[in-house]
Length: 626
Image (cartoon, rainbow, N blue to C red; front, top):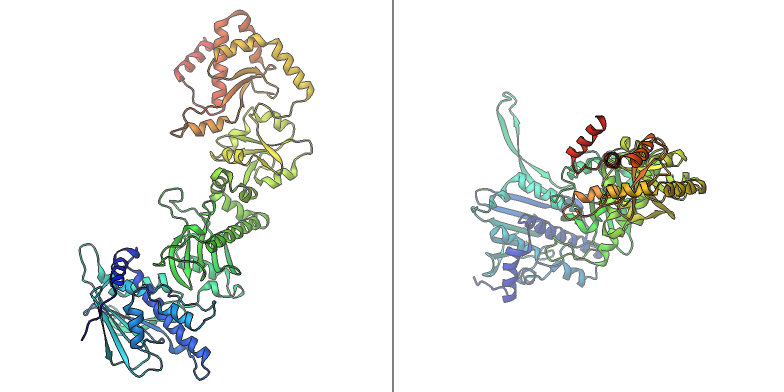
C-alpha cells in the first residue's frame, strides 16, 4: 500500500497546527464536530435542490464513542460523505476547505451557514492523536474509502467496507506524558463537558452512549450498570427562539447554565439584528460584583459564537471597558475569524456590533432609571463606580454616553438623584450645579462650606467616592450648567452688599490677615474674611483646579505626592474666635501665632486631612488650656 506524501507546505502547516495555532487541545473535538455538522448541512442542501430527495431530520445525527482499552475516540456522522477524490483533495491538501469549495461551487445563498472556512480544523486531531483514520462513503456512491495518517509523514487511501452514507473519524489517542494527560479525551464526563462548552448549539443531535447505574431492586446498596444513548447538546439556542416564547425563568436558567454568575441577574437584553451585520445577543446586567472585578485577574468580554459554535469564552472587543460588568453572548456569522477560530480579526463588522451593543446597554439602563428606579439604584450601588471611571477614562471620550446614567446623593432629596433631575429642579437664578466632597454623607452635611449654599435653598450633590470629582471635572458641565465645588473660591452667590462688606472687612483687617498668612507661610495661599460662614469659625476654600478631596486622592498615588490644593483659610469675622484673634494681634504676637495654627489645624481636621505634627498640635491645645 503506497503512502502518499503531504505537500512540503502542508507538512510545515501541519506541524504549525499541532504545536502553535490552537491554544487549547480540547478544541479538536469542536473542529471535528463542526465538520460533521457541515457534512449534514451539505446533504440537507442537496435535498433543497433535488426534488427527488427528502430530508428527515431524525435520520441525521453525530455520534461520539470511545474505547478505553484501544484508546480510540470515534466521531461518526450521517452527512454527505466523501469520495476517494474528495478524501485526496480535502484531507491530502492542508488548508483546502471542502466546505468553502462546496459553498462556492453550488453558489449557496449567503445566509446558509457552513462552519468550516479554512480547511485546517480537521488536523487539530493530531494534537491529541497518534493516528487518525477516516472511513467515508459518499452520497450516491457504492464504494467507501479509508484515509489514514500518522501525521506529517503522509497518508494512505484504500477501499473499505461501509454500509451507511457518512463519515467515521477514529482517533488513536496519544499515551499520557508527564506534562499532558491525553487520556482525559476518553472520559465520558470530559467529552460531555467539551461538547456542552463548544458545540451545545450545533443544529443536529450529538449522541453518546453513557454509562449509568441504579440500585438493584432487592438490594439498594448494590448498583447495576447499563449503557444508555443520550443526546448531549441542546441544539436550538435560546437566542434563536422568538422572545415571545421565552419567560424570565428561561433567561435566568440560561444565565446559570452558562455560569455567567452565581447571582440572579437584574436585567436581561435579548436582541437580534439583521442588517449590514447580522447577529443575535443575550446580555445580562448582574446583581452582584465579581470578587475579582477590580483586579488584574478579571477578564471582561462576551462569549462569541459563530453559527452556534463557541469561538471565544471572552471576546473583550465586544464590550467597552465602562460596561465590562455585562455578561452574555453574541452569535454572528459575519465576523472575520483567524485560522484557529480562537481569535477575532479586527474588522468593521466587529466594531459595528460593539457600537450596537453599547447603545442597547445604555438604552436598557436608562429605561431602568426611568421606569424601575429601585432596580436601577441596586445596580448603581454595585456598578456606579465603574460608570464614573468610564466618564474619567480615555480623556473623557465617553462622557456623553455615560452622563445621563450618573447619580449622586442629594442634600434636599436625601436620596440618589440623576443630573437631569437636579437640573430640572434648579431655580432660574442658580448658575451652577453645586457639589460637596467628603468621606460620607453625614460628614459632608456638617461641613462649614455647605452653610451658605444650603441657606439659600440650593441643592447640593454629595461626592463620597474618590473618583467622583475627577469624573465631574472631566464632564465640566451638564446641560450647559457648570459644576462648582462648594469649597471653590467663587460660587457666584454673594450679593453686592455682601461683596462690599467683604471688601471692607478685608481692608479693615488687612494687617491681621497678612500676619496670619505670614505665620502659615507655605501652608495656605491666603487668609481672608469669609462671606459664607454662619456658625462655624473657619474653613478652607480653594483656588485653582485641584480641590482638597483631589489632593487626598493624589497623595495616595506613587506619583502624586507633590499635588496640593491651593488652600485659602477663611475666617468668620462674626464669630467670637475673631474677637480673640484681634485682641491677640493687638497685644500678643505669640498668642496670635498660637491661635492661627490652631485654626489652621481645625480646618485641616474638618477636611479630614492629616496634621503634619500631632505633637505640636497637642502642645498648642495645652497652651490654650493653661
